Amino acid sequence: MDRRSFLAAGAAAAVTAGITSDATAEDTPKRSNAAKFKLKYAPSMGQVKHHAGKDPIDQIKFIADEGFTAIFDNGFPHKSKDLQKKIVDELAKQNMTMGPFVLYANFKEKTFVLNDKDIRKMLVERMKYGVEICKRCNIQWALVVPGKYDERLEWSYQTANVIENLKYCAEVFEKENKTIVLEPLNTLKNHPWLFLTKIPQTYQICRAVNSPSVKIVNDLYHQQITEGNLITNIDMAWTEIAAFHLGDNPGRKEPTTGEINFKNIFKHLYKKGYDGVLCTEHGMIKGKGKEAERAMIDAYRYCDNFETS
Image 1 (spheres, helix red, strand yellow):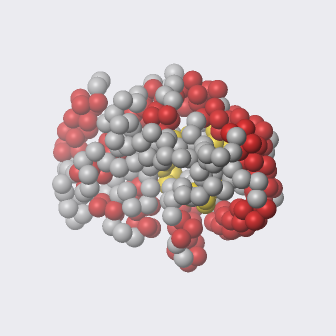
Image 2 (cartoon, rainbow, N blue to C red):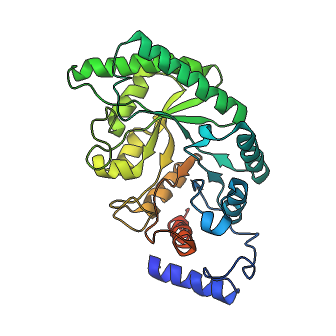
Image 3 (tube, rainbow, N blue to C red):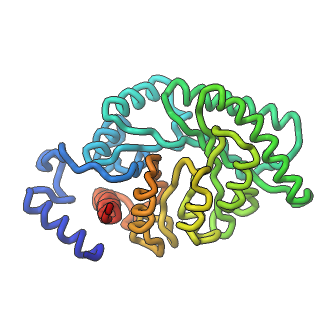
C-alpha cells in the first residue's frame, strides 16, 4: 500500500469512528488506546499545540495518547525547575522517554577547536550545569555542537583539540553515567563554518575520546545533505550512535515529504534492535494548525507500518 492509499484508508476509518481532523475538542472522542509505535519517535514540545494547547503537560498527554513513547525539548534547560519537575513527573506517569536537550551549540565562535585553558574551563562548567539537569530530571543525553572551525589552524590540530576538550567534558558526564551526544550538521544549507559535519568524522572523534559518555546524535536531514549513504553510515558508526534527529530533505519537513525512504530506515533500525529516541526535529509540510499536525502524525504511522519479520 502506498502512502496516499494508506492515509486515505486511515482517514476513512477515522470518519467511520466519528473522528475527523477538523472536529472540535468537544466532539472528538479520546484516542485512549492508540497503538504504540514500534520505535521511540519523539515529537517536540510545541509541535502539537493546535491539538493539545500550550500547556506542556497537556501536550505530553496528547502525544502519549497518539501512541508515541518519547518526546524531546531542545529548550528544556531554559524552563523553570518547577516546570521541569512537572514535565518529568508526567513523563514517568506515561512511561515516556525524554530525548536530548541542547546543552551547548555555539554557531558563532571557535571553542572546541582551540587549545585554550579559559575555553576549556568554560566548557567544563557548562558540562557541570548540563549533567546536573540530566541527574535531577532523569534525562540520559545532552546535545553538544563543537562550534566553528579555525581557518588559520591546520585541521588535524583542530581535531586533536576537539578530542582533548571532549575528554575533559566526558569526565563530568561519566561520574553520573550520563551521555554527551555530538551532532554533525550540514554546512551547505543551514550552518556554514562549523567544524563537525559528517558521521565518519564524528565516529573517529568518539573513538578517540574513548568514553561511554561521548556518542553521536545522527540527524538524518543534515546527513542526507552532507553525505547521504544513510543506512551504510548508520551501520558503520553503530557502536557510537546514541540518538537520531529526523527531517526529510529538501525542506526539513516530516517523513514522506522529500527524498529519504524513512520506512526502510525505521525498519532497518528496528531490526538492529534500536531502543533509543528519534526526535522529530522538523517543520510540517502543511504549515501550522491541526491539519498539519495530523498529517505529520499520519506520516509517522505510515512509515512505522513496516514488516518486522
